Length: 183
Image (cartoon, rainbow, N blue to C red; front, side):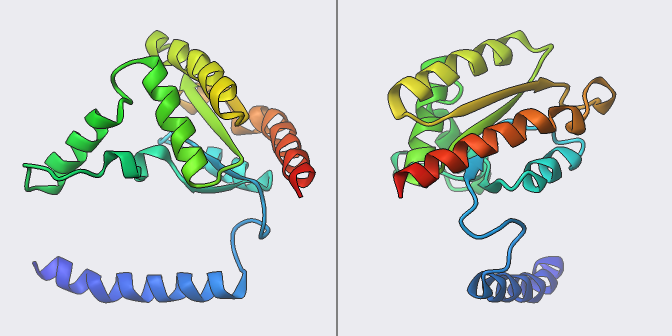
């Protein structure tokens, strides 16, 4: 309880600073930059996310940090962990590949995202296969571009964010062109 009470003023200060930055139009990337989600990405090394931002793409969220409207229902559970688990199971993410594509497509549509970048673990066959099949589902049903990248989530010796930069930059240019064509 003490830690939570001490943390609240810090969170409030951060929220105020964030609001001030948004109001001034100051951010990590240029205002109006293409917005993408990274549903699966390496968690052991922040260099991958920095590389995405350096390529001029905005990453407002990962799919796992947002609960879509279709997931919000009255729950019999009382703790945050149980409610979160129930929402994730209801979302379809863990049910089948079509559901994974549906969750990503609906999220991108609901949040007006320009694209999706999936970084899948190359030695995990179920995720590698699901990423490839979900890409087809998303592009066919939602007309949202998807870039699949492969590497190792935990061991950065097996891939380099710099080696993926050209593909991400090319994807970013395609998203900017598509966005400009809509205007």
